[in-house]
Image (cartoon, rainbow, N blue to C red):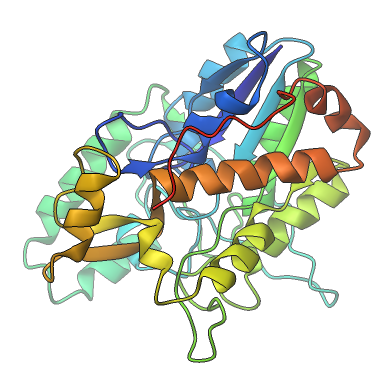
Length: 323
C-alpha cells in the first residue's frame, strides 16, 4: 500500500540538520514497513498552485488502486492575507449561502499571459513598490514556468474556481484510480488572544470562524470523504501548551534554523535576537502533530480508514526527543 501526500510546507519533508519539520516526514515512523509514503508536499503551494505546477499530475500518474491520498491545503489558499501572492497562490472561498455553505465553482483555465486584474490594481496602488513593471515581469516569468499552455487563475469572486472545487479535484482524482482520498485540516497558526485562546482573523485561516477549515469540512461531508481534523487537535494542543511555551515547538523565523537537535535549537531559542514564528513547526512540534494525526486515524469510525488503521505499528516509536 502507498500513501501519497499533497500539501504545503506544514506537510513537506526537510533535511535532518534543519530545525523545521513537516508532519509528513514523520508519518512513516508510525507505519508498517510494507507501507510506502510518497511526500509530494512543497512549501508555498496552495490547492491551485499545486495543480498549475504539475505536482497534481505527478501524483495522478503514480497513484493506484488501494492507495491513499492525504490532502492538506489552507495556509497558502487563505485569501484574507496580503495581495502579493494573489496571482499564484490565493484561492477564494466564494460567497456562502444562508446556511453558511461555501460554493463549489468550477475552475476556468486561461492563457499564461493572463494576470488577474485584481492583482494589477492592488500593485498599482502599492506605494511601497516603485517599479511596477519589474514585478509584472516577474509574474509573467512565474506563469511561463508552468508546464502547460494554460493555467487556473485567481478570481476575486471565485467565478474562475473556488477553494472547495480545487480540493474536490484531488478527491475525484483519487477515486478515479480506486484510491482513497483523506482530507486533513491544516494546523492552527500559533497566535493567541489575551485570554489564551487561538486567534481567528485575517491570515489565520480566513477569519469568520476559521472559514477555510469550515470549507474543508464541508467538502468532506458533501463528497463523503474522510476528514482528519488536525486543526481542532492542534488548537487543543496549543492552548494547553500556552503562549509562553509555544515557541519551544515552532520553527525559527529570524536566526539560525539548523544544527544539532535539540541542543543547538535550544541555544538559538535562548538568544535575545532570535525570533520564533507562528506558522511552521520544529522537529518536536511536527512530531506531535504526526502523533495527533495517528490518534485521529485510530479513533475514527470511518470505514475507509480501517485498512489504514491496520497498517499502523503496534507500539509508538519515539524518535524525536522532547525539549
